Length: 559
Image 1 (tube, one colour):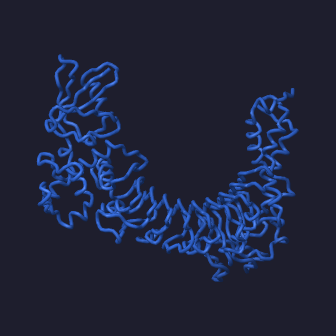
Image 2 (cartoon, one colour):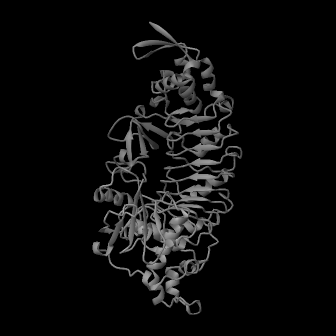
Image 3 (cartoon, one colour):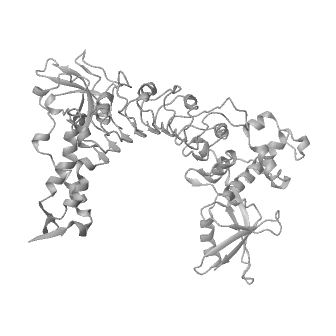
């Protein structure tokens, strides 16, 4: 039995699923890429090929004695696919970047790809043609596609604004000017993981897309053009460019940069960038730059410090361990990175607080991500590390994806003052402003301390905390739990670690006080702040966050 389904009833959802299904089917033979060596390109060396799901670059074409027949020497993008460095039985046929990155394959096993237009037909036009007018099986019923013409009108190639040809073996633009006639309104083009071998081929595609704003080119290997400005219209509107894992160096990027006069976002992670040179007269409109997972040398980042509009910089997994802005003294602001608001330095080798002190010199920094660095693991608990980061960088609004609230900042800064108060006094600090002269060494190590003293006042002697080595006994607090609304209940004294989060404290109280299932409300009082009751309002914060100290009283109420 055949059933008819109305396109308007399903609002296009079935056609999308069917198209996704059809896109996984093999395309008829006439559109398959040429693989036979009789049709091997005359300029095969330097071309890109695909073989068994891997991509590589042809470095050699010829015979390899004692075997007969033609071979391709391929340097693979993934060196694990290779077997050698381009040598066979003592003869060196081609060179690889990796000692095991090459191998020989027969031409019939390698695909040199298809042109852009063929890939478009394969990805979009054929999908729709195979769906329209056909009967498809859904569950146990045969369904006739009726009324889908209006939906597929949007699928027409000439109406596309987003074109996704990822992993489609695109290797060339195709006939001249045909792209302009076929996909004239493209705003976003995804060509990641294809077989394009040079920027000239990319430009031959994009210069026919006059409205193109975003280009995804990750996981390609592209030769630098001999004249980057030969096609000024190729990227005239481009704002976003992704070049992740393209085996690029920074000089190569700078050589290409004149092609992208209006570029705002550049994603260049997982490349071969080690040193950074100053981008003179290029990349000046960048607001976002991703250099993560590149083996940068220490200090390299300073070379891009004059980019005037850069707001977001990702330096994660770059080996960063030191940073110095020598143009600014401790407590002052650097002229470098004037617009930088967001910085990621995750998974690096930062082990000194001096690096964080240098970040305080950045005049616009409000978001910092600093996870998985040795510096943080040195502290006895994560809460302390977070507080120190907040206190040392005065304008942070977000830290490690966590919003820094005003009360978070106040608590962190007050604890910071108490934590280093003895060191401040020993260095020459004094509660009398006329006699307050801490040493240059202390000021360098704690550049914000003086401003925090002015903001909150110097800590009292009873508030000063001696820095003790980590030991459980040093972290236990004697806390008295009181139920002020239940006068017949006796108070309970417990010793708890200062790293214990409020949520676990509440769980303990349910058991200790045998409170029925109800929402607990906690606050605390301290002998140092007579008459003041401070609310404990965040279940995920440790006791230390609220500056609860040994001997304090926690008030327990419930609804």
